[in-house]
Image 1 (spheres, helix red, strand yellow):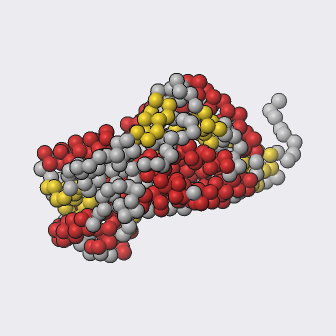
Image 2 (image 1 turned 120 degrees about the vertical axis):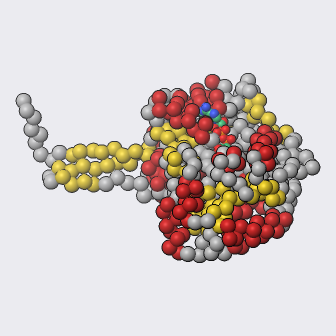
Image 3 (image 1 turned 60 degrees about the vertical axis):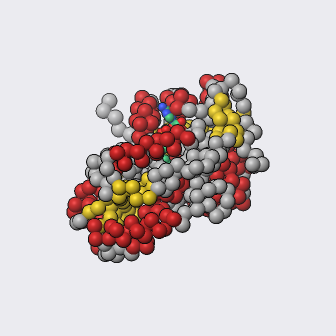
Length: 485
Ligand SMILES: NC(=O)C1=CN([C@@H]2O[C@H](COP(=O)(O)OP(=O)(O)OC[C@H]3O[C@@H](n4cnc5c(N)ncnc54)[C@H](O)[C@@H]3O)[C@@H](O)[C@H]2O)C=CC1
């Protein structure tokens, strides 16, 4: 492989690459081969200090710029990301193992959408005038200050942009810590933003494990934390942020239900189940991994699903024909394998898949279990891999109760041709993001986020502005002020 994956340095701070080799080395492994393709170093306390100091110093002048000027830079960065889509997609594929067929349309493209959308919104961020007789008040929408973004490993470019774009649009500075499993892509986002004209210090990337994330979250100079990660990490980060009464956005895990009624278009339902379980080798937080299929169409569904899965092209992620790649890491592959073993042990019927591929890298077959019951581990816990659990149901009331009987609430989907039922079911879902006759669409114009344990706050859309800014109220007296003495 000749692709240059080793970054110029581990961190991007104050507009420049910065190295400090005294930090713990982090090896970047290409999931398709197991080869080490780069090494970065975790941030030392000195690097953490440097990034916080420079980001804070840069933030006020940025917030003082007119929104149009901030937005112009973000929109320029969006254009640059699109122009460099190929290189960014190749890097995303090497960072994560996701097929180029996916990364070339999904990742830098989604990042560019966020930069463009929030770049456009930057000029529209205003307060309001409130008339109070002769007196009046007004509100100012102001930046929070210094925001920390902490990313998961499944969408390193997208997460870096989904957090960075609204933060910058609102006049904040951002320090982004990518997952230690996929540290490469966010550095490119930082580089592009600065080439697009972002002043130094406003978008920074530092590497590291949970310890570095923890140091950033608990620093009193940080005003807001946005995490994409698992629920256990969410608990820790939320608690640490609470110490400093900081703003938070939590995009956490899920075990989302996908309901397929007997009046659904079967082919579309199978497509939805495939998209909601096997895209990115199943490593998507909002996946509909509990697929409830009406008893009357269960066997037809499983037959068609098995046929369609045979068409999956598993192999070299850089081959444009490949539609299914490896797991992100050996560890994640082993976690998923342990769930497959549990599924078999607990009596689920293995319909297809279940095995590791006999080749280098961390490849698992797309796996489908049928006859899964609600109490089985594979129906309760987030697996974060290509494992679909198919459960049967008889009636809408029954399936709604079962679909909602989970502590998670990230997403949910329904396939049916009954219009009234579709909206009734969507209204009944205890989830932040729902789909009717579709699955896993995440356009930047639509709020994305979870209910229950799956999260706090929303990313994307106008709602994200609420989470990266705050209102200041200013009361203006027009006449004399009376006082009791
Ligand atoms: N709701 C959403 O938007 C999404 C949620 N996810 C969730 O992410 C998880 C998979 O990603 P992982 O990287 O394995 O998650 P993880 O929770 O292990 O790590 C997430 C990030 O948090 C950092 N971290 C760990 N401990 C920390 C601490 N004490 N303080 C501060 N930072 C800390 C990690 O270094 C990493 O950057 C799944 O549960 C998945 O559902 C993934 C993508 C999207």
